Amino acid sequence: MSVTTLLAISLGAILTNNFIFAQFLGICPFLGVSKKIDTAVGMGAAVTFVMGLASAVCFGVNKILIAFDLGFMQTVAYILVIAALVQFVEMFLKKNIPTLYTALGVYLPLITTNCAVLGVALLNTQNDYNFIESVVYGITGGLGFLLAIFLFAAVREQLEVSSENPKAFDGFPIALVTAGLIALAFMGFSEVLRNLRRISANLHAAKEALRSARPDVLVLIDYPSFNLKVAAEAHRLGIPVAYYISPKVWAWKEWRVRTIKKLVDCMLVIFPFEVDYYRQRHHYEVEYVGNPSVGEIDTALAAKPERCEFLAAQGMDSKRPYIALLPGSRRSEIRNNMSVMLEAAAHFPQYGVAVAAAPGMDDSVYAPYASERVHVVRNATMPLLAYAQAALVTSGTATLEAALAGTPQVACYRANGSRLSYAIMHRLLKVDYVTLPNLIARRRVIDEMLLHHCTADAVARSMAAIIDDNAPARREMLEGYAEIRRILGSSDAADAAARAIFDLASHTHTSSK
Image (tube, rainbow, N blue to C red; front, side):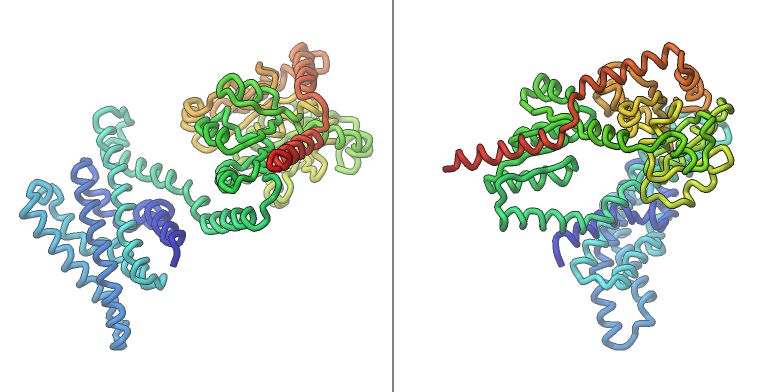
């Protein structure tokens, strides 16, 4: 048993496997005692106490039942234990906190039949947890229940005084909708916690490698949440740290700069504006080494086949111009953006449509969208962009790739809960633009149609302004692309980064003599 195991159990019980929002156990008291925060907290505390103590007692009871070959009595025995504990809680509250006892009413004795309490005891046995793991799971499961009912009560109180709902949603219906939305929020923690053990093991392996190998220099690439922990170990060991590709601290999580300044000896950035950001805002000298996309795009464009050859290989009409669609590299991105892109492209029936398939994405993802007009292209994004009349591109590196390829584009990005996401984004982001071309140029070069602003009609209007060869907006965009190329400079980013890293290692080695 390790601390990591207990941490995984705890976070799982509170967040990813929350008894209310993930396992849907204990719904009766959750809905019945959540109108007020004080009663909700009281119920949550009572459930936490019973779940923790029941986990401990039931562990011993289960051992006794197994010893006497009475395993079939497990559920009955657990209910009796829980009933006894609930009776104790009821007596305590009646004597010491009568107001809370009255407020909880019938829901207090109903803890005995609360599925969450019985569920934690049964799950401890099912998962073969030892005593400590059982107690930790019981207590943190109760804390997860407490967190859930507290949040729900806080929202319900606010809804009572300030919300303007449709008549049909007044009262209990809006409470159920709210519970569903909170449950969706809890689902977002699952990916991190699912990989917690693997991440912890990788971090341990990286630190151990530093201690045993003692390299002349540690080179980190992006991925700040992991890499800065590795950098801390290198700093402790006296190993110089070079960081290639800065974390996007200029957009969010600016507090990381303090850690970077402390741990990183040489920060190598790939966007010129990052130099000014670090120097002017944080008095930290960094080195611009060029952007690797410049060289990669130039190499890919130089190797592209002739237009007729390329389009024939894709089964496309070489006499017909086409619009390129780059809907993203994840299923959720494709699902959210593809329909909007296709609907926008439908405004231009004289153009064909070619979709750039993401590497590793199964054909079945794109099959519903393919047609006589819509072609799916694999492993040929650069020639697809180079020969396209214009492109619809999800925000990200692809927008810079389209700019370097010289393809007029509209950046579009939709996501689930777009209006809420937009509000959150505007509060969190510390930059005026989202797409890389605009960030590099420090002005609007391409249109950014983001979240709930990304509608088919709006995207089509932006596309109409740039799709014709003689359109003024198209010429302005291409001039902006030329400016971006000048700003980014030469295409030898990898060589420049390697030289800087070698200089750091050499200087450190010389200084140590």
